[in-house]
Length: 387
Image (cartoon, rainbow, N blue to C red):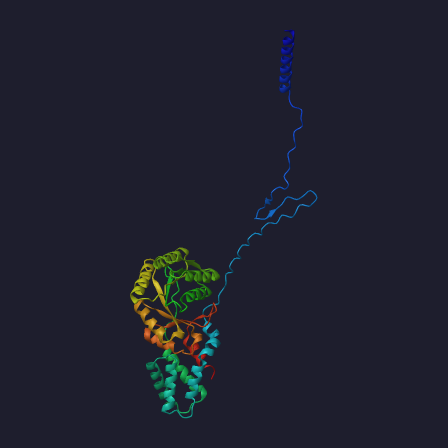
């Protein structure tokens, strides 16, 4: 019995000691955390990454992406005035037309002018795109004058030919462009023509001519069927500080023209130039489109000029296009482009006779200032060269 009591006492003592041990806090040192082998690389601004430097290495230089350079401002140009441009470009015109003039001067300077010689003179004029009826009339007039004159020095022959050509071109025709403001409204110039004739380029160059003459200009990119046409016009405008009004590709051309004229009125500019679409699918579609543009513009301001752009190198094809446009809108003047690229200067006479309107501007190259007001005497002088 005594043994049983002793065993129970020992068991109770063991339980008490075990409980006290559980209640006492542990004195073991905590296990230090294991450091990672390598920290992940830091992502720097600009997209460049770099790993953290080791203790025995210097910190690397932080590489940042260079900032995008700002686009340089477009420098505003000061174009030369329009007056006298044709005289300055005379050499370029003379190179392309000299064959025509030299041939005529050579034929007229012969000691004897028989029927064959006069036929050759007429053929030369026809070959220069002057037209059969005009060439025949010029030949007959020259024949009469030569018969009256008798002897012919080179100077007299040149004077005769110059007088006759200037007369046929129309030396006394008013070729001025209406670009003056009237009242509180700007002058409005519509430019029409088939795509490929240089129509949009002509609008840009015309803007330069007007700025060079001291005018302020707004241009309307109403050829909305070609996004490149609006881009091209904006480039031209930026160079001379002219505002360009445009809309998204395929927008209503009349609405662009309307907004351009409204902008011109608000800005109190001198002239608004409207570039129109040059599609020539059907005459009816063209008539509807151009007619609508003109009517919408005239709700705000009068259309002062409707200029038809023709490629001088296309000859009779250009004349057919001209007739269609003349039936569609009331043309007030002709712009002959690429005149330096053809030896057929007689087209100036023919197009005026066919359409009953004057050539007002001529394009004589690819340069920005190669559009010039047409001057008949300077043109004939370039054709004939020096006596």
